Structure formats: structure tokens, C-alpha cells
Length: 119
Image (cartoon, rainbow, N blue to C red):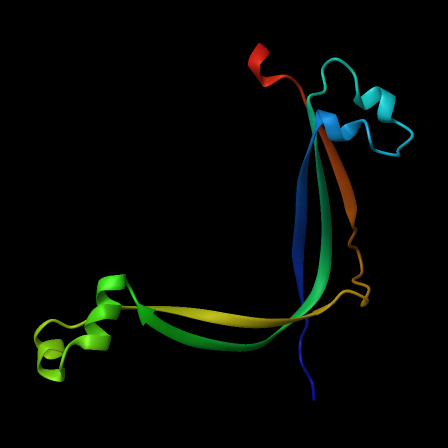
């Protein structure tokens, strides 16, 4: 069974408020607690090998009123006033984080946000 893997980028981001920064156990905490720092944004970026395994189109009523029509109206009324349906495609992906991808990197970005009210 042969298949091709794709490289996808995943990002996780977290905002850390000033009161939580004091509890961090990192060596540079004192520099982060400067008078300019109100909060931090930690961002983790990773490139992961993935493979699309399946996709399926799913339909559902567009509004609650369309759902009521489908459930309670007789067939002749549905022909006269058809219910609107929304169709979306759901995709299933397999992720292979332990496969090394050449020329890629994982990294953490830390951004310091100053006091936004003093601009």
C-alpha cells in the first residue's frame, strides 16, 4: 500500500496574563515582569507529516425552521415549501508526528504585550 504524506503546519497559541507570569518557573521571568509587560503570547509551531484518509459530504437543515419543515410537514407541503439544506465536507486526517521531515523545524515564539491602554 503506497501513499503520499503531506506537510501541514500546526500552531498552538496561549495568552498568559500578568498575574500568571509571576508563577512561571523560567530563568528569564524577572525580565518578563518588566513594567512594559502586561501579558505574554506563547506560540508553538510544528510541521507534521499527515495523510488524508477519508472525506464525506454531510447535509443538514440550514435553519431551525427548515428542520421543523422536514420533521412535521407532509410530503405535499415539502414540495410546495422545500427545506433548504447546507452541505459541508468533513475530512479525516492521519497525523504522523514521529516521522522526521527534512528541512523543517519546530519552535516556540514568545511575544510581550505592553499596556494597551497607554498608547
